[in-house]
Amino acid sequence: MVERIALFAILLVSCGQFVSGQEPEPTPTPYLGRRETEIEKTRRLDRAHERLARQTYSNLYGQGAYANSPRFNREWRAAMVALYRKLDAQETANLEPSVLHRQKYSDLLNEKNTGLFKLIPEFGCGEDERVVDASPDCSKYQFPGTGSSYSFRLGSHRLRRLADVTYIETSLIARGVFSGAIFVELGDVPIEEVHLNTPGLRYLAEYLPVDTATEAMEAAKRFANGVSRDGFIYGRGVFVTEGNTFAMRSIAYRGKYLRSEAGVIYNELDFDKRRDVIVAFRIVGVEDDGAATIVWRILRDTKSPKLKTPK
Image 1 (cartoon, helix red, strand yellow):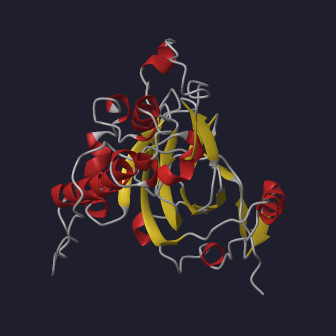
Image 2 (tube, helix red, strand yellow):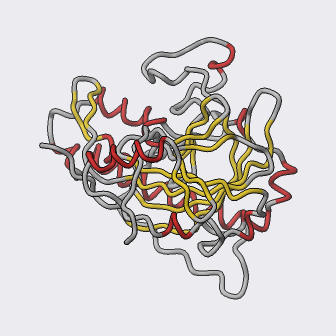
Image 3 (tube, rainbow, N blue to C red):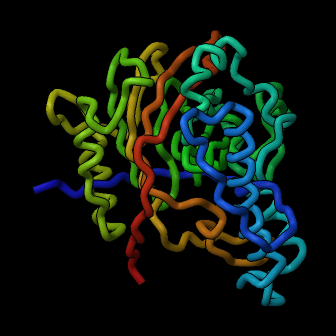
C-alpha cells in the first residue's frame, strides 16, 4: 500500500502586477510541428501572469469578495499589491542568470513549464517584509523573498511563506505554509533526460497527500531523518551541489492561512497558485558568494488537495 506522506514548510509568493480588464485570455494556439520559440514562451508566461493578476485585481477592486466590503480599505489593498506583485526585471537584475547558461539550455527553455533562475543564500533580510534593511547584502534585494526563495508553480521569486524552495546556508529546503515537500538527489543526470520513469521519481509520483494538519506534521517528522526507498534517500531538503540534478514533490495545499495587514484579516492563500507539482531541477553553477543558478522543468502539475485543519 502506498504510504501517505507530506511535509510542512514555510512558502513565498507574489501574484503579479495588477492590470485592469475582466475578459480572460484565450488559450494560445499550439505550435504544431515545432517547439515554441523563447520569445513565444516569454509571451505565454506573461499572459499567464496577467490572468492571475487580473483575478487578484478583481478580488481587490472588482466583483470579488475582497472588493465588496468596506473592511478592505485602500491601505490594505496597497499592501497586497506590494506583497504579492509580479517582480520586474529591474528589481531582479542582480539575479539574472548568465547568457552562457541561457544559451546552453536554450532548447529546454523553449519548452513549456521550464525555467532558469538564480538564488542567493538567505541573509536574514526577509524575516519581516514590513522592515526595509539597508545593509549592503540586503539593499540589492528589496523585494518579496529577497532573492532567496522561488516558486516553481509561478516561475518567480516569491515570499518565503509561499515559495517551493528557500536557500538557507548551503541547502535548498521548503519552508512554505500549508505545504508538503519531499526532495531526492538523482546525481549527475542531464535534466533533459529526467522524466517520471527516471529512477528515483516513482516514489515521488506515488505519494498520496495527507488529509489533515496532524498527519502532515507526522510525515514531516519521519522525513526529517530521511526515508530510504529503492536506493534513494528522500528528505526535507538537499545540499546545493554544482553539477547535480534533483527532484521534488511540492504540494501546495489549499486551505486558509490567515494573516493581518492594515488591520484587515485575510487568507494569504487567496494570493497564490496552489498546485501539486513534481519538479526536476539542476544546479548549473555556484558562485563564490554562494549564489546558485538553477534550471528546472515541471514533470507533472495537478490540482492540489485541501488540507483539513482543526476548527
